[in-house]
Length: 396
Ligand SMILES: Cc1ncc(COP(=O)(O)O)c(C=O)c1O
Image (cartoon, rainbow, N blue to C red; front, side, top):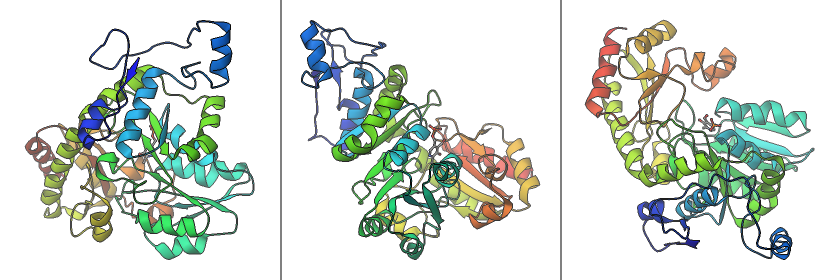
């Protein structure tokens, strides 16, 4: 096996080459190691491998060459010392939080979280004696006021799902560190192409690799990136002992996805920006939210911490739920699906799908009205996307 680590290269180059482990056959493309275990040359080697004195793999619940390539490539790109891949994005979020916490601890999180992440913080952790406070992530004073002596970690996603609010990562990291807490950032919506939370002061970044990293709607996956110390202390043992591991096959799909990630994300985000221009002026649209625009509520923060806009656009259709349903049902090219980051453009109505479990008051607090629609812009020709949207708006 040989590994290449061309750290001196630019980000796009690292996404094609970093972390590659070539076998004795010198294959061009990354190998798929579909194996559960590994054989040892001798009893002594097995003993030394288990004592961590002999480098190599032991069992694919905790290490596998294809998974390692994915982890190393992501770490090289993100500028992280270490990474651990997981079976899904939710496994990554859960491990990154649970690994740091014990009964009696306290978590502060932004309330505009993906539904399952909010469930972990609001419902699941308290069952084990970990209390939590949800704040308006854009209001820095609320983060400060929520701190308690037992606060161990802060958690946020930015831009948020589905209203694309932008939270100031550097400012929240500073508040967390002053409180002796860590900051975990879910960077799914921004993607590693447009935002680097670790460079902004976060201690840990998590991804649902299911989204843009695969980018073609095929497999689930997740990854946790942080310092070697954070991974060893909080993630490594828990992942090894509880087993929410990424399958080598999915790691291989995700590795190949990384090669094209910058090209896809930039193209999708350019198309989303074009769509936002059209929607902002449309008489049937009451409000348009797009992080790349000067009229975004946190435009200054977005400009400070993001290198691009977003592949997602959110907007309120005048006429509430019935108008939003008519619009979605009239789309011909763009399909109704709660997923995002796919090559195929997808549309969802958060109030009746992803955020259905929240009360109307909780949805109102988050700006999720009955007319809100979220579009994940894909790789189709931008004119076809815009034409489909305009024709569907005509039907409203
Ligand atoms: C912001 C965010 N975080 C985490 C997840 C969970 O990822 P997964 O579905 O891969 O578990 C999702 C989507 O499902 C998401 O949108």
